[in-house]
Length: 95
Length: 483
Image 1 (cartoon, rainbow over the protein chains, first blue to last red):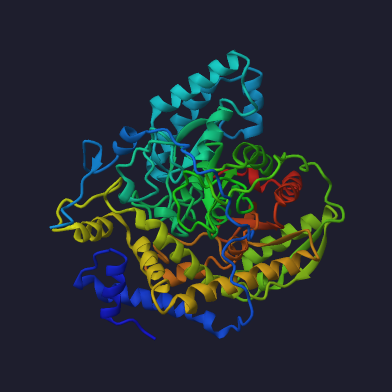
Image 2 (image 1 turned 60 degrees about the vertical axis):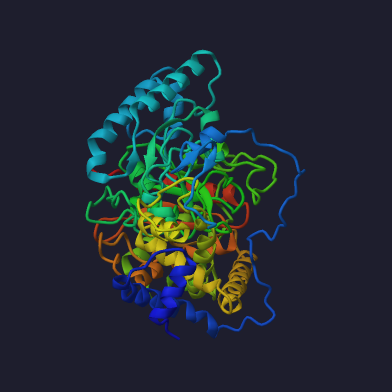
C-alpha cells in the first residue's frame, strides 16, 4: 500500500509537524520508501511469539509515593520560551 | 602526551609529571587548531574546562584524587550537563542550557574527569553518518571526504584525532560501534540497563544505551567502571552488584569459543572488510581461541523491526518538544496547535521529522498490531537467535558495517540506503546485548575498519578481555591519522 497526500497530511497533523504543500510530495515518497522496507516483516510467521517490549523482560520498579525532587522552578523555567509569575505562557486555549 | 591512553594519563597525573590544567590546555589547544576542519565539537568553553581542571588539581593536592581525576573527556551532546548547552545536535535545543546533569555526567564529575567540550552528533542520535547534525557534518579525521559514522560521530572523531583521550557516546542501533569502526577507535556499548539513561536525551528508550570510546579496551574498562551503576531515576536501570570491568583483561584466551555468524559474512559484505575480519579472527586463533560457526537467521529482519520500534518510541519521546517548557518556539503562530506545528517543523531536521512521522503512523489506530506488535515479535525472534548462538560460543565476532566509511553526501539523499548499512549492529540493540568495535585494519581506500565483538548479557568483562588480548598482539588501535 502507498500513502496518499491526504494520508501524509493526516500523519503530519497527528505528529504536530507542519508540512507545506510544496514538501508533501517529497515527504510522502520518502515515507513510502521506508514503509516499503518495513513491509518485509509481514512475510514472517510470528504466530505464538510473545512480543518483546524490553531486553531483560523485567517489570518496572515501584517506589514510595513521596516527594524526592527539590523545588527548582526558577532554574527549570530559565530555559522556557515564555514565562510569567512562575507560569508557562501559551496562546489562548479557551475562548 | 596527546597520544597517551587514559591509563598513561592517569599514571602521569599520579606521579605529578603533568597537571590537570596542563592536560586541559594541551587538548584545548589541539581542539582550537583542528576542530574548525573536523567539526567534532559543538561547544567548547575554555573557562569552564579550566575551572574543572583547577578543581581536579586541588583535589589531588588534597589527597582525594581517584584513578581518573584530572583526565580530560569529551561528552556527547546528548548527555544533559548543568550549565552547558545540551543541543543533541538539534536546532530545537540550540538555546537549551541544561539546568541539571545526567547520571553519566554526575559519575564522571564524581571521578574528577575534566569536561573538554560537547561532541557533535546526528540530531537526536538519528543517523549513521553525522550528516544530520544542525551544526553540520563531522569530518572523518582519516579522510575529510569520509563520514565519521553516526550518531556518535563527534565522539569518535575527537578520540581518533586525539582531541580527547576518551569520549562518552550512546548506541541505539549502532551509534557507538559504527563511528568507532569508521574512525579507528575502540568503543563499547554495554548491556541494556547497565548505564543509566537519566539525563540522556531520549530517542528510543527500550534500545538507548550509554557507553564510551577511547583508544584501548583497557581504557574503556576503566571508564565503564566510572559510568556503570544502578540509578533509581532510570526506570530500566538494573540493580546489580558493582563489578570491576577490568578484572579479566589479562586472562589468556586459550579455549575461548568464538562464534562467527554466517549471515554476517554473506552477500553485501565488502571483500576488503571481510579480509580484515578474517585476519582478526586468525589472530585470536593464534591466541588459542576456537572458532565455531553460528547462525543468526533473522538478521535481515532487524532492519524493518528496528525502523518500526525506534521511530515509534521516538515519536512518543519527542512529543515533549512542544515549544512550551524549553526548546525552540516559532516566532509567529495563530493558535496553540499552530505553535506546536510550526515550532516542531522549524526545530527538527528532516530525518527527525521522518522518523517521528513513521512512528506516528505505525502507532496509529488500526496499524498498531500490524507494525508495532509485529516488530516486537520479530525482536523476540532475534533475541532467541542470539540465545541459541551463545549456547555454543562465548563471544560472537563479525564486521560492524558492510563497508568502510562512505563519502560525505553519498547516501544522505536516500534514507533507506542509509538504514541498510546498519545491518550488523541493529540486532544487538534489539536483543539488548553488549557489543564493541575494536580497530582491526584499514580498507583498500585507507579508511579504518573495526571488528565487532558481541557478548552475552553482562558479558562486558569477557568482551573487554578479548579486545584487550587482541590489542596486545596488534597495533591498529594505536594508529592515529596524520593531522
